[in-house]
Length: 359
Image (cartoon, rainbow, N blue to C red; front, side, top):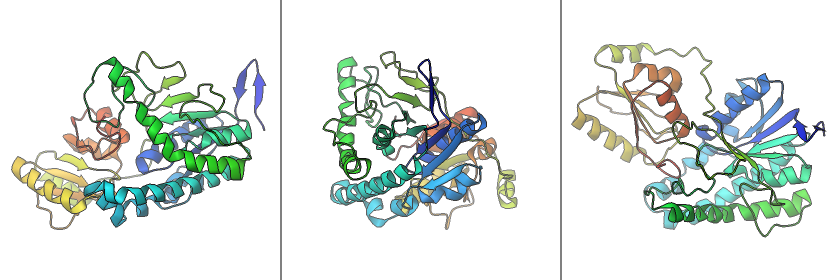
């Protein structure tokens, strides 16, 4: 396999990384891939097809894991589920999501051939099964705290701490989440990997019950490592990707900046749903406040048409450069945007949209 063992230490030459999601789910793994590559490892990064040019522009080998995630997120059904009624629209979305995961798993199997280790996350937990079949280590990762703890509730719940016992109880949600991934994982084990089906799955354990090493890509200053976490859970700090482009403010943006005090940044990253609603709220909020704002369109979460002179819409800009021109950051609570704002010491205000963002 190209993987040697010496005194119980694994010497890894080639690493496959599998991730699914929006840019916030891909960019940290690209930063990790670049860091590993600089240390002499051979890296292949598997992600949704949207990100091929982004990954390859940084000199990292890319493998498409199917689907166009932006197209999926901008469907009318997804918008209605997030903005109107999840109960009605959710089941069809879940079925479509399972198909996306199943396709990605089969493509990841091809990608992992010849690898000495595989790095995965919640959305690509099938990597645990691929690692078992290939007899290579699997390394779990996360951008938010997922191992159970008594110190605070599960990160997807926007609730206060209820005490140690009840806090730990909230982590049963991960078991419910895992059910969603079990069907495509067992199908993969039977049809492709030649493995028996599993009756008990775990996000942080190998099929034999041993603990997976789990890397948490956030700062312990922002979210201190729980004292009751296992030793296998390691908080590494953020995996930041410095901008390598020659981005500079456009003439229009420079003109806007020159006409008043530094604006506040407002953006919702890759959250595309509720564009008209969000834009109307934005107009009313900035008018009531009386200040100035620069708004990032992201994947369509803001409609840039007919904005007042106090709001400047920007199509796309690297956060580590754009935030040098703003006085504060208002965003959805994505891990990467949070890190970028704090790194530049900008006051940060969170308007969470979904999943772990309230945490």
